[in-house]
Structure formats: structure tokens, C-alpha cells
Image (cartoon, rainbow, N blue to C red; front, side, top):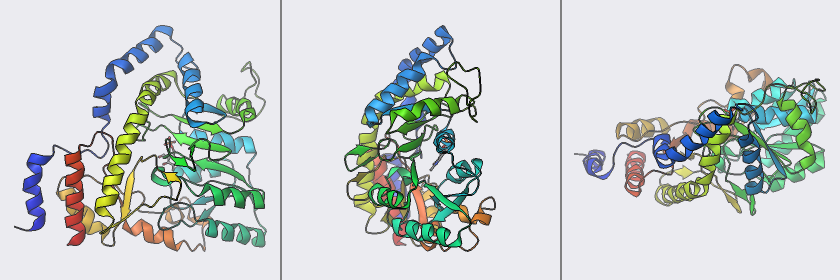
Length: 388
Ligand SMILES: Cc1ncc(COP(=O)(O)O)c(C=O)c1O
């Protein structure tokens, strides 16, 4: 009997079924409170722009230290709203990592601007400031596009290098929009995600660390003067009376039911985040000698939406780990510059770290309801598979 089979036998008495993300366990914990909130929406009937929206916006701003937060339809809407407000348009270059979810690029393309792909730091999986500078210089030299904005992404919840990025943006006269879709709860230099950049988009997709029961997102600002325009864009670009269109906008609203759910989930978020961080610490301690877990910058704490690590023989390790009852995911097997929809924007890119990480990365179960036994078992299984 080999080592892996031994673990399998031991596992049957040590752990039940392991979920990659366990929304059912969370729901069992807060279901009466959520039902109460949903009942309140059914009673007042304001399914759009109900009082829960403003309540949520106030709480989100208060807890992140942002000047204000605007609830919106999705993380994608949260990216598009500030890009529209900045006036990003055709002929502009917007610098984004290629190692991200496709929404980051789609939001840029919706404005008519061109995404320019920047490589990542192979340890943090976040935008590499050195390559960012290089790509800005290349675009200036070519002279076809106007460098206009940049969108760092806080991959898996870990804040990007906002110190270097803010300096480059200021030197180059570029706007910064943080894609914090995965990083609600993250911290950098004692400031929370939402208050790390002039504008920050986050997603409340159900599988995120703070997730709704449908699509939802929010955009945060460090300058409260932004929000009138953002709220107008969110409501088809209308004026305060919502009668006349004064700018181009779209339906970017969050519905009231989602706000009701999020209010109850926000109440337990800190407790859940502490559990996520504890699990990430155990994974780091147990797995750093046989794999390369995501590194965090000094002063950064991840929001721990996902836990990803690199191993050389990724596909074989994943196969073995899955066989042992541990679910995994791969974010992202294909970087954006290799996807048909975006390849034309990266004809001659060299994104060496992005390409290398995409071949080796995979994600382990990460949710606050994993038991210590389950975490232990997952580590045993990954250790055994990676050492074979
Ligand atoms: C990095 C990143 N940006 C943007 C988004 C878009 O968020 P949503 O699905 O809520 O539109 C996601 C969602 O997964 C994401 O991971």
C-alpha cells in the first residue's frame, strides 16, 4: 500500500466531504437572519433602490475607510462605472495584468479603449511595477495610443503593490482603478481594500469572500465628489430626478434583495475572514517546502478569497489530489493575452512570468467552514502528491 492509499484510509474517519467553497454551511449559520431581511424587502416592496442599498453603502464605506461606496450590479459594472466617469475612450491605453479574470479586459474594451497587458510578479501573482513602467514607455514610443489609466488586480485577495503603482501613475499622469473583485477584506499598510486607490471595484459574486445570492458589486472612492456621477452612470446616465440623460450610462444597479443578503453576511465577515486567514496560515506553514504558495507583500494581508499555489508537475498533482477527495480549481489556465477575444491586443507581448505561473498554479479549498481535520487532511494529500 503506498503512502497516498494510507492517507485515504485515515481520511475516512478524519474528514467528511470537503467542499471547495461551502455556501451551505454559511447559510445554515445565518439563515433566520437572512430570511428576516428578505421578508423586510418583500414587505416594503422597493426591489430597486430600497433602503437596504443605502444602508449597505454606508456600512461598506465605514468599514473600509473609503470616502463613499456605490452599490452596483456586479464587479464588472463596478469597473465600468469609474472608467466611464474618467472619460476613458477609444485611442486610450489602459494597463492591466494578463493574469486576471476576463472581466478586467472586457471593462476596458466596453469603453472603446485598448487593454495593454502587463506581466506579473511570479511570487505575488500581481502586476509587476517594473514591467508596468516598461509597457508604458513602449506605448509612448509607438505613439499610437495615449496612456490613460491602469488597473492593478488584487489576485486571490492579496493587495497589489499600491506604493509603486501610485508613484508610477503619478509620474506618468495616469489614473488608477483597483480591481479588488477578489480582495474585499484585504489590507495594505494598515489600510483596507476600498481605500488603497482613488477608485476600487469589488465583486460580490456568490463565491467571493463576501458574496451575494446573485450578481452584485460595489465601487469605492477616496473622494466623495465622485459619487454623484457614478450614481448617475449606474442609472442610465440620468440626472438627479432620473428623467433626463445627462451622460452615457447603463443599468448598473444592485437589486435590493442582494443588499439585504449582503448586510447579514457583512455582520459575520470579520469572523469568517479570521477563519480564512487561519487556514491560509496552516496551508503556508505546511506546504511551503513542497510548493510555492502565493506570497504577500510586506504590509499586505490577503482577503483570502482563494488560496493558490504553484507546483512544477501541476496537472499530475491536481489529478492525484482530486482522486483523494480534495476539490481544486485552476485560476487561470489561459492568460488573457492567449484568449481569442484579446489576443489581437497582445501581438508581440513577452509575459514570461504570466505564462510560467499559468502552467503551475492551482487553488485549494478555501472557506471559513473547513475543519482543522479537513485542512490537515488536505495538506497531507497535497504533500504526498507533490512528493511523488
Ligand atoms: C479579478 C476580477 N475582476 C472582475 C470580476 C468581475 O466580477 P463580476 O463577476 O461580479 O462581474 C471578477 C469576478 O470573478 C474577478 O475575479
